[in-house]
Amino acid sequence: MTPAAWEEDIRFLQTTVHQDYPFLFKKVSKTHFDNEVTQLIDEIPKLEDHELKVGIGRLVSLFEYGHTDISFRQGVAPFHKLPINLYHFNDGVFIEGTHKDHAVALGAKVVAIAGTPIKEVMARVRPVIPAENEQYAKGFGLNYMIIPEVLHSQGVTPELQSNIAMTLEKEGRTFEYSFAAVGDDSFKTRYSLMPNDDTWISARNQDQTPLYLKNLDKVYYYEYLPEQKAVYVRHSQIANDPTVSVESFYNDVFEFIENNDVEKLVLDVRLNGGGNNYLNKPFIQGLIKAEKINKEGQLFVIIGRRTFSACQNLINEIDNYTNAIFVGEPSAENINFYGDTRTVILPNSGIHTYLSFAWWQDKPQWENADASVPHLAADMSFEQYRSNQDPVLEAALNFDGKDLIIDPMGYLTSLFMNGQLDKVTSEARRMAKDPAYRFVDFEKNFNTAGLNMLGGPNKEGAIMVLALNTELYPESPQAMFSLAKAFEITKDQEKAKLFYNKAYALQPNGALGQAAKAAIEKMSE
Image 1 (cartoon, rainbow, N blue to C red):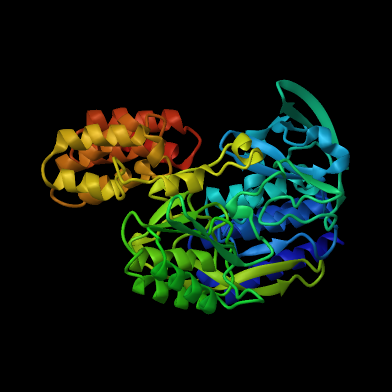
Image 2 (cartoon, rainbow, N blue to C red; image 1 turned 120 degrees about the vertical axis):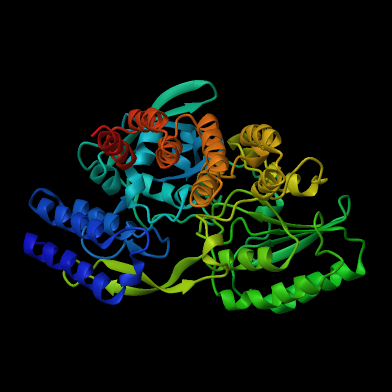
C-alpha cells in the first residue's frame, strides 16, 4: 500500500469515530486521540505495513473498551503467531500449551522474550490491547505477546522475525528456546486454554479434570457435591445450549436444590465471556425466588479474568438482587460499559475495526468501577493448575464467614462515621496487607473518599484519610498529590510543598509530577 492509501484509511477511521461514535470519547479525549492519529500519519513513510496495522490497533485501543477492537486477521499484512499459549498465573507467565514438537518448553515459566524481561514485554504490548482493565489484559491480552508483528511494532524485537527466542525456566533450569511462527489459524485455544489432542498439548495433567473444565462441550452443566451439600454450576457462555435452553436448565437446577439436601450453590462464570444478555432474566428470576439458597454464606459466584460482556451484566444483576458472595479474581469488564459493535472496514487496507455503540448500565454511575471485585480473593498458581487443583472453588466451598468483611470500605466508613478513628487506621492497615482483600483497590477508594470530604466541611477528616493513604502506598504519586492538594486548600503551604515534591519525585515526567511542579512554582511566586 502507498503512504497516501494508509493516510486515507487512518483519516477514514478518525472521521468515522468523530461523526458516528463520538460517545466513545469517555476515557480518552478527542484531542489526545487526534494527536495520536497525527503522529501515526507522520510516521507512515518509515513504517512497514504490519507496523501501521498495529498502529491502527493502538488508536482503537485508546478507547479502552474490550468490544472496541480491530482484527489482525483481515486486510493487508497477514499476521502470524508463535505455536504456544501463554497464561498468567499468580506466580508468573507460563507456557500453558504448545505443539507436541516443543514439549521440552511445555510448562516453562517465561522469563524474557527476545531478551526483553517479561514484565517489560507486557508493558510494551499493553497499548495494543483494547483492555478495559488489567484483568482483560491478563485474560485476553497475552495473545498479542505471541504475534511477531506486534512484538516488532512495539519494540520487543529489533526487526520482524519469524523465529523468536525466549528465556525459559523449568525444573530449576534456565534455558533459551526458539519458536518458529505459524499461520494465525494454525491452532485455537478454548476459554484461553490449550485443548489436548494428538498435535497440541496442555501442561495440565490429563489424568483427571477439575469441575470448571469438565463437560466443556456443554455451555453449562451442574453437579451435586454430597460431602459439601453443594450444587456446582459451570456456565461458560450466555447462550442456549443446543440440548437445553437456559431457562429449562435452571428450572432443573432450582428444582434439584429445592428437593434435595443442598446448603450451598456455587455458580462458576470465570470462563464466561458473554453472549446474549437477554438470556440472563430467567436465571435471575429463579435465583431471587430460591429462598432456600439465596442467603449470605450459601450462594457463591466465581468470577475471573474472562468474565466479560453479557456475563458482566449477569453478575451485576446477581449483585443487585441477591445475597451472593463473589469469589475469585476481578472481572474483565467495567461494571457499566460500551458493547455491541458495528464493523467498519477501512477502504484500502481492508482492516476490520469493531466500534461499540450500545451503552450498558446496570448500576448508577457512582457505583461504576473498572471491574467487579470479589469479596473473597482467590487465584491459582501454575502448579495448582498443572495438578488439577482448584483453590478458587475450594475457597467458596470452605467459606465459613469468619473474619471476612464483605464490604471493606463500607465497614471502614461506618467506623469513621462513629468516630472510631484509631480503629479506622488499624483496620485499614490490616486489610491493606491481608491477601484476602488483595483485589480491593484501597488506594483508589481512600483517595476518592478523601477528596470527596475535602469538598465539604470535614477538612480534618479528609486530611486524615489522605495521609493514611500515603502511609499505606508510599510509592503512589496520586496519594502524595492528593494530600498535597488538601494541605494547599487548608492553607498549610509548607506541608503542601513537601507532598507536592514527593509526588514530583515519584513521577517527574508524568502528568501528576508536572502538575505538582507547577503547583510548587505557583506557591513560590
